[in-house]
Length: 401
View (spheres, rainbow, N blue to C red):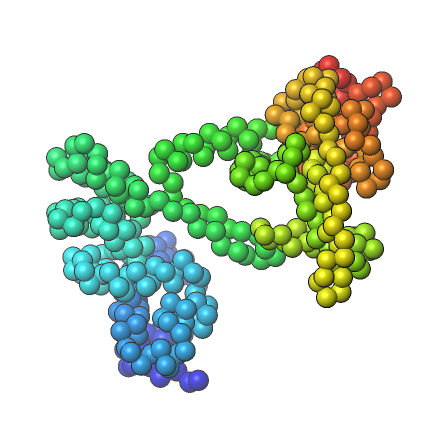
């Protein structure tokens, strides 16, 4: 569909096209810096006009019939804006008219779109009767500081104005700002962002720090990667507390599989669960220290067979292995808490559920031996022999950390 533009917007589009084809060499530092500053200021002005236009689109009752969706979905699906950017644009278009001073500063190019959005967020989090008093100070702050510092400035400002001596407003504002966003990106990975209240943030940070410690000198993960893996351990711990165990094992795995997949030994198929798809290697790791109840389905989804739960490590074996392994993961140099009693010879390879075939592992090293392609064997001297993907071997002797 051809674009139909108002004259001012057509002039802006023409000017931008002219800028894009202008390849002259600029060597003056003053001119280079001046150009960048002027362009940023112009972008703020264009954002202000864009917010007005989006507000007009959203207010037009005919637009839903014209675009076939709400304004935000149109921005995301047709204009391909990222979700957070579309949300910010919608907030600016909706709430700026409620705060004329902020709207004026934005349209006069004294503050950027990011500053305006930060001011709206800060104002929305304090009582209505204080907003008119606080707003000019936030605008002034935005002239000299980045958007990220606007929210934190509110606490300082309230205290300077002699307001909120008991902290009730401050606590209420922080509580209003709390939230976590998870977005699905390529190949099922997730992008995580959010704001935590001080008490939740402190507990979360402490748990993350404790669960993301290095597992010895051979742990080559970056701190960021260790924190990622720690989130998985925290999630596993939650499900271990909230999901039924059906017995003494730490978890029960009810495997529902069609006969053809079962006969193909679950080699390449992904497995569906209530929490999303899992790769076969992940399923095997989760099932390593669990009761397994097989449910076999026919071609039309009918239940052909429900097996008996095979018995897991007994309480006596668990305790004996814990004492023998020193109460820690059996990877050399790992001081992490052991949480998984692992079958050294996998059950699908005929490994026995016995003390001699058991080894306590932390969550990371349990992942390493199932999905990280390391191998774990009994050492001839009674300890544990680890072999990495290039054949390098490490030995953990029983009785040593």
